Amino acid sequence: MTDRNLWSYKDIAAHIRVQPDTVRSYRKHGLLPPPDHVEGGKPFWYADTVRAWVANRPGNRARRD
Image (cartoon, rainbow, N blue to C red; front, side):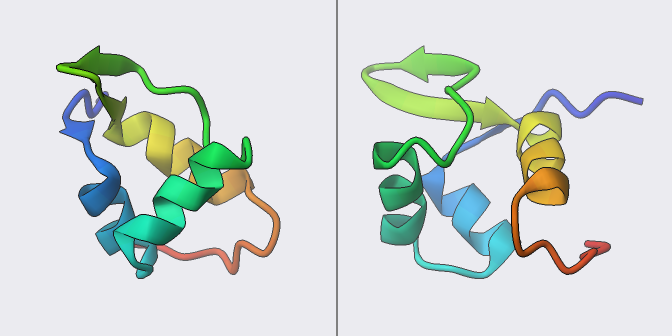
């Protein structure tokens, strides 16, 4: 099953338990995958994209949520 829900900075931040500004910083420094969709100048990512990024990023501690 594919999760095609679009996530904002706020959604990603809640998922990885950081502040939205931290996620913005990740993107600015090239640590976040490119957005899957941009609407009104705002970037969004598919939930599956974020989960794959979390699973493969350095320092991942095998989170299951």
